Length: 310
Ligand code: GLU
Image (cartoon, rainbow, N blue to C red; front, top):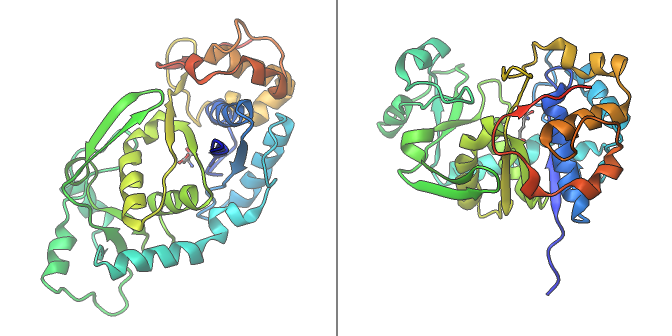
C-alpha cells in the first residue's frame, strides 16, 4: 500500500505583521512538508475580518511569504481561510448541539476572571461550568441576550506523543474545561475551526508554537467526537528568544517583517531562522528551496530557540 501523502499547513492569525517567530513556524512547516515530497497549505485564521487592519495584515502576510520564497499548494485559495468557512463550522456546531454537548454561557469577562482557575500558559483558563449547571436545570436565556456557546467536555484523559515535546496528557474536565466553540458575536472560535479545518483538509502534520501544546487534547477530543480523522503528527516548536533568552513578542517591532525586509534579503532572513534553529552552523544567506536538503525533524531544538542574527 502506498504511503499517505504528507500534508502540512501554516495557520497564521493576521493580527499584526509577521515576526521572526511566525517566520520560524512557517518555514519549519514548509520545510517538513517539502522535504517529504508533501503538500503545504496556507490556512489563514482571519476570524475577525471586521477588526481594524486585518485585511491589510493579510495582504502583507501573503506578500511576506512570497518575499521569503515560501509558496503554498493551492496558492492563496480563500476557501481555506476561516472567514470563508462559517457554513462548515455551523454544520459541525449543529452536530455537537444535536448531541446535547453545547450550552449557552452568559458569563461576563469579569465573572470569568473572578471564578476560574489560574490561566494556562496560552492565555486560556479553566471554566468552572457554572452555566452548564444552570443549563442542566433548564435555565432559559433571556430574549435578546447573546450568549457564547460552550462545549461540555467529559472527565477523560487525552494523551498523545508530540514529535518534539514527547508524551503529553491532559484531563479534559480538570485541565481544559468547557470551552467556547461559538463566540457571543456569532464567530466560531479557534478550537472548533482549527479542528474542523485540519481534519477536513487532510492535514497529516501540524507544526506550531509550544504555546498551543495544551490546546491539542481539546482538538483531538473534538475530532474524535465529530468522527473526524485528526492529523497523525503534532510538533510544538519551542518559542524564539533573543540572544539573552528573553521571549520575542509582537512588541519587538525591530524583528517584524517590515523592519527585517528593510535590512535583510529573503535569503538572509531564512539564514537567520535556519541558524537559530541549528539547521545550519551560522547565519548565512540561503534560499528556502536550498534549505530543504538540510532539514530533518530530528534536528529541531527541544528548548527555546535563541535568535542568531548576522
Ligand atoms: N493562528 C495561530 C497563531 O498564529 C496558530 C494556530 C495553529 O497553528 O493551530 O499562532
